[in-house]
Image (cartoon, rainbow, N blue to C red; front, side):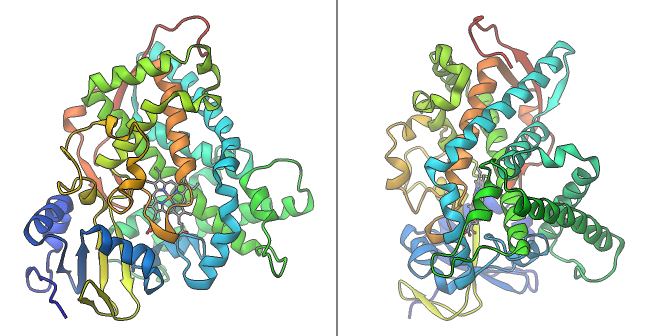
Amino acid sequence: MKTIPHEKGLPLLGFLPEFRKDIFAMDKRLVEKHGNICSYNLGPNKIVLLAQPDYIKHVLQENYLNYKKDYFYDELKLALGQGLVTSEGDFWRHQRKLIQPAFHRNEITQFAEIMERETKSLAGDWKNNERSNTIIDLTEDMKKLTMKIVSQSLFGTRIFDNSAKLSESINYVIDYLTQRLERYLKLPPNIPTPRNLLFRRHYNNVRDHLLDIISNRHENPGDKKDLLFMLLAAQDEETGLGMSDQQLFDEIMTLFMAGHETTAHALVWTWYLLNLHPYVESQVHDEIENLGEGINSVFKNMEALPYTRAVILESMRLIPPVWGIGREASEDDQINGFLIPAGTTVYIPIRRMHRHPDHWNDPEKFDPDRFLDGTLEKEKRWVYMPFGGGPRQCIGNHFAVLEVQIALAVLASLFQVQINNIENIEFNPGVTLRPKNRVLAKIQVKKVRDSQNKP
Ligand code: HEM
């Protein structure tokens, strides 16, 4: 058996300080020094870093049943229960089979109309901002937008927007989870600290509200073909049974949580890169202007926006909202003759793979052209992984790309988004890869032809 090169870190802490200081610099250093595989300690946890496409494929696809989601996901269970992100084994497989059809490429096109409508509503607000010359917080606006899109797609209404109390509760649940996920040392959630108690109260409020909606839908299914409708209709092929209400709630919370923040950050980072690359930005504007009347219903003209799509894929290469994946080996395994003992955490450094010089020409360059002919995504299957890979690949990948493409096209058709503090934007790799500071942007209305889009 071959020995995995081990980096010796500090006693007890291992590489925790370096990891916290700059995980991306650390990934780069380790991959340059050791190549495909190496190990190190983060506190008491042994981590094996994998930077080779075949090794990654092994973990995410070939032997994925041996690699469970790591300890990080246990925290998520507090709010997501047994939803798709956090469940495992046969239960997960069964749920994935039930839910997958709702995210089929053909099904999600019906949500494109919602994406466009909600973006136009934001555009209306931006027009007012521009008149009063306000500077907006881009991350906040993108989050509000993606939250509205995902709740409209799930329930056919902007549910969290309609009630201040419910909105406060869902925001508390999100903040609480984010903080727990990003803290290394924390008290167990069942200790009655004020924060833990408050979390319980807000979580119960969201749960009661959503269970009420589910129960009303059982009684009056109505004719809305939203995601909730599809989830309610989903039945096991053999038994004919659907999901319990608690399971429906877990899945709804999961789709809501997994579906909005990642997408919001994909949008923010795309604006950021466009600001840094005026030539690419002008190409995007040209492509959108060439849509002519088509801009009035972007969702019907997606095939006319190949460059915008390539920009989004390239943006997620350089700045992937999910920057790494962790798994824990259930049993001893071997990867190309290296022993992976049971209990080891394996780490797939998505962002590093996206910039790995063995796999990309000019890896640090923002060059959307590389995605233009549409073949690269498949060709680099285990190198380019903004949505993960294998059976547990993101269920919302088509939904997300469609959403970012529509939002970008609608907003760029009307506005020039100029980030004021571009020089000071830093990266914060937490649950998602987000900006450390606020992204402040000035919104300028473009001079558009009369026939063009009006929110
Ligand atoms: C740009 C936006 C998005 C990015 C970058 C992203 C990324 C990812 C990644 C990397 C995974 C795999 C995690 C792992 O293997 O540990 C994942 C899983 C998942 N994502 Fe996304 N995601 C995005 C948008 C969405 C949307 C819009 C939805 C739903 C509306 C969604 C729902 C899910 C779910 C349910 C899973 C778990 C799938 C399973 O384990 O079966 N995501 N996502």
